[in-house]
Structure formats: C-alpha cells, structure tokens
Length: 310
Figure 1 (spheres, rainbow, N blue to C red):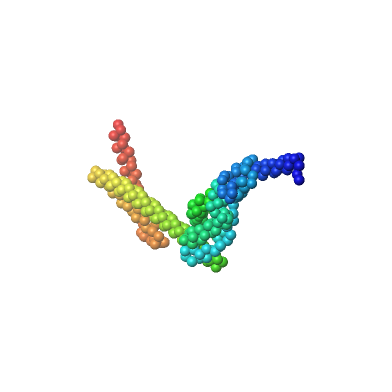
Figure 2 (cartoon, one colour):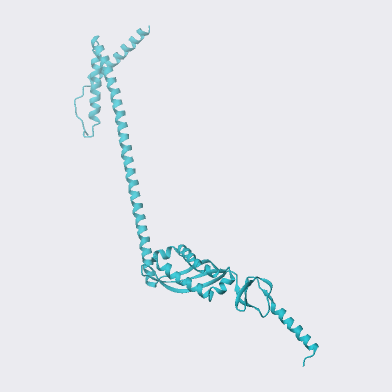
C-alpha cells in the first residue's frame, strides 16, 4: 500500500508530466494544428503555447515558409505532334495551416500532380514554335491555373518556371538546318541589296557626269557664240570704216581690207591638218602695198583724232 508521502510524490510527478505535455513550443516558420478528441480546434503560432494535456493533441506540423519543389521531366506532345521533354519548378507557400492539413491529403504530391497535369494541358495546346518562343506566357498560364486549384487547400503558388524544353534530336537538327538556311537567305538578300545600291549609286554618278558634261558644253557653246557675235560686230564695224574710207576716196582702205582677208586665208590653209605642203603664187608686193595702206590709214586716223581734239 502506498503511503501519503508516496501519493504526494506520484501526484507531483504526474503534475510535472502534465505541465510538460501541456506546454508546446512552436519554431519560427511553422504552425501546429490542435485536435481535441480527433477534431481540429485551433492552430498554434510560433512561440510558447499551452494546450490541455490528454484532451488536446498536436495534429499536424506545417512548414509555413515558401518552398520550392522540382517537377520531374515528362514528355509532352504539342499541337503539331512534336514530342518534347519538359521539366520545371514550383514555388508555393502554405497560408492556412488548417486547410493545408485537413483539406488535402499529401499536399506536396497533390501540388506536383496538379502541376504536371496542367503542364501537359497548356503546352499540348500550343505549337512547337510557340512552345519555344512563349515560355513566359506558358509560366503565367500555369501559375494562374494551379494557383486557383490550390487556393481551397490554403496554399499560395507564387511561381511556376519551366526550366528546360528539349525537342527530339532529329527535330533539333532540322531546326539547326532551318536556322542556317534562314541566315544564308538573309546574307544573300543583304548581298543583293548592297549590289543594287552600288549599281544605283554608279548610275547616279554617271548621270551626274553626263549632266555636268552637257552643262559644260552648253556653257562653252554660249561663250563661243558670244565670241563670234563680238567678232562679227568687230568685222561689221571694220567693214563700215572701210566703206566710209572708200566713199571718201581713200583707195588704201580697199588694200587693207583685201590684205586682211588674204592673210586670214593663208593662215587657215597653213593650219589645216590635211595640208602638209602648200604651193601657191605669193605676190609679196601686194601684201606690202596693203601694209603700206594700213600705215596710211593709221596716220589718217591719228590726224583726224588730233583735229577733233583741237
């Protein structure tokens, strides 16, 4: 039989055990659910908490920090019947410990299967070109679908990233050949464009040269016409002077006129490229007489000038 002293000791030990059982320390970043006779009653936050021993018990211990989970590689058939291998990662965080503990069984497995299923659904509705060029759009669509589906579980899916999309080897080779052909096509187009630009510039240069040459010829013709006009005016004036001298009875004016024309004709014959040797009767006395007439004309003109000045 137990004595009073043993009973007290047993009571104290039992009290200590109950106190220890009733005190729960919850680490930062986690939350514990409390069940009373198998039914959820409350959630314990990080820190020191008290529960009723024996009556209450810890149900589930939830990690409330954001977690990352790898999505294993899986084969996906695209809309244009290309088979690609896809993998990715999912970032999620438990926001409601009670829902995460009691609304779904095997939370991570459920999120993983949900993500893999939606990857096949979303990527299978796209062509291969869209698959390879619209990865951001794929991530956004996956995030929207999976986050909506996990909301009842008290989970927030923050990001879904497709890490790698691997087409079959033969398809990769075909894409490489296509890319090479496309680059060669662009290079040929650039070469042709450069040649065309060069031809245009060359034609423009030739056109400008012809225009400038025509402008030069026109200017030369204008100057030549102007020179001949001045020469004609001078000849007309000289003829007028000779005519006036003849009218006044000065026969030397005729000699001057004839001698001038005679010398011009001789100069033209001598400078002709088709004539290397010229034989012709030359009356030196006529030319000398003409020069003498020129001298007399000059003296008469000077005398008239002095008379006019006096």
